[in-house]
Structure formats: C-alpha cells, structure tokens
Length: 320
Image 1: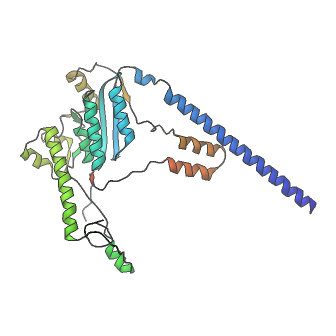
Image 2 (image 1 turned 60 degrees about the vertical axis):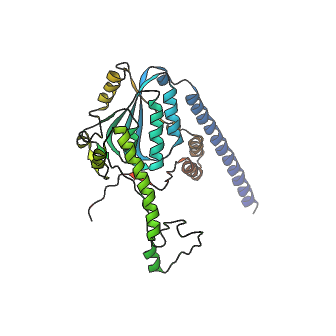
Image 3 (image 1 turned 180 degrees about the horizontal axis):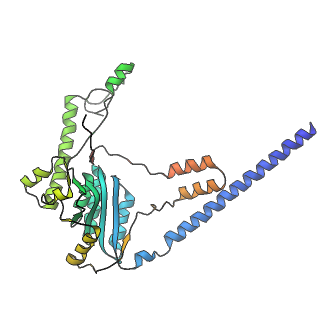
C-alpha cells in the first residue's frame, strides 16, 4: 500500500510539473508572437515609403467590413500612392456592404485617381464596386452586370406540417417579422417586401445611369438582371475598355498623369496577414500541447459574414 501511495504522489508531482511547464511555454510563445507582431505592425513599412500604384483586391462575397473602410482611408492618406487599381473578382454580396464599398471608393477617388480592373467577375454588388472607380477595364471574358436586387427566404411551413410541428407567434401587427419562413407569406407581406426590393433596385439603376451616363433606353437594356461578358458589355457601355491590369495602369499614366513604371504594391486590410492576439494565443496553445484550447481560440479568431437581408449577388441556376 505504501508503494502505491508513493507512486500516486510521484505521478501527481509529475503532473503538476508538466502543467507548470506547459503554461510557461504557452505564456512565452504568446509573448514572442505578440512581440513579433507588434514589431512588424509598429515599424516602418518600406513598401508604403516609396512612390507606387496601390492595388486593392475585392474578391468573394461582399459584406460590410470596417477593416476595408480603414484600408481605403490609409491608401487615401498615403503620400506614396500616386494611383489606385481596384482589382475585382466578385459575384456581389449584401446591398449595404456593396454601397459602403462604393462610397469608400468614391471618397478615395476624390484624393487619388482610381481605376477598376475586372479580373474574372464584377456582378451585381461587384459591379456596384466597379462603378465607384473613374474607369472600368475588364478582360474580354470577364463577367459584368447582373443589375438587380434579391431577397430570399426559406418556406418550411409544409415540412413543419408534415412532421406535426407548428410555430405560434403573437405580433403587434400582421407585417411584423414577415416573412417568418414558418408560415406561408401573406400577399400583404409579399407586397411590402416587393416594395423594398423595388426601391433598392431603383437605387441600383440610378447608380448605373449616373456613373455610366446611360439614357433610360440604354439602362433598360442592361438592367433586367442578366449577366454579360465584358465583350458584350463594351457596346452597352458597362465597361470602358477591354484589356489587362497593365492596360488599366497605362490609363492612369496616360490620362491621370501618374508617373510611368511605378511599382504596383498590394495593400491589404490590417489583420488580414493572419496575425492577431487570438491567433498568437492559439499558436502558444499548440506549443504547450493544449490542442483543444488552440482549436477554441482559432474559432474565436475566425471572422463571420453578417447578412443584412437584401442581396445584390449573382446566383447562376441550372435549368430544372
């Protein structure tokens, strides 16, 4: 029995020592990574100290992002930036996120010459983004347009009826919290939603007409929600030029007097490099062997996309 007691005591002491060194390693790793990150972000960035053309990439789903707003502000305030290329490859996103991006680009265009280059797609909210630039250059096979607004919601009422589930609600008025998805949408609720979609659609069309200088007839020809290739979009005045990013930069040099042959430098939102206190803590947890803690910290560091209801996004659908 004494031998067993001594063995248990030794194991406990070993476990306490192991826990101590794990915690110590965790703390040292966090301090090291945080120190390196602060040194990197707080030091002078040599890229931002030389004359250049800044490239800002807008890709994937567009949603409101304060980091992007900060990025446009920094580019606009940089004395090193002579011109800006907005490289777009996006099917769109939320209407409010797209509007925010458009207005940020217009503010930037008041300080720097800005050209949009469509690498693969500038559809719906992505096209709203392109409208913010002073000129739109696109590859011949790029996709542009999809001028329209979408509001989607699921209707699971028949499924609930099938499995014998009902969702009851007490509302201040019939149109409150409509559509719910749990009950069929009433004609009045559909009409209310349609009015919101129509209003936002009118805003989108007004933006296109104003920025592209289209007549009512020209606007009607491009605003039925369809997508166009850039080759098709040229005679419709959706794009200004077919070409490459080099062609977009050449326009900055030729028409906006940006010095020729400047380096093109990528500007990214702060925090997009992957460094953050959360990621540093996750790295420290890895070093300390705390895999579960590391996974939890990484999930906390992952950004989430918040939808605002209305979408300006291109969604290709297969024929049924």
